[in-house]
Length: 146
Image (tube, rainbow, N blue to C red):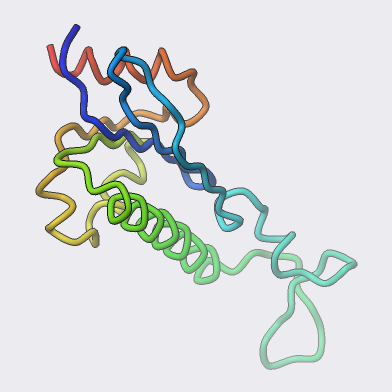
């Protein structure tokens, strides 16, 4: 069996799960988090009860989703994921760690992470494993080490 990091974090836009690698070679969940920015539709967060979006500069409402608002919600989602990663790494203090998140958000999540954490990043998988079973996650990290 290939060596995997002692701490593995898997995430997507709406959920994060942190695992500790046990002495028996399995994964133990140590923390989970959900992020409303990644799980809810924009319309659920910003519309009135009838489903209309507020329009600035007028008294009416519109039936569209503002692109700047979508971009802001995405930035907030990435920030929430980063903050949770920092919290976990700060409390666990692993000598190295592994990370898996879908390729389309991987760079955005890791870009603003402090160097003291990225320097210890042993394995970075651009895979969506957040809904995978622990044994499948472990296999993905073992395969990367081959």
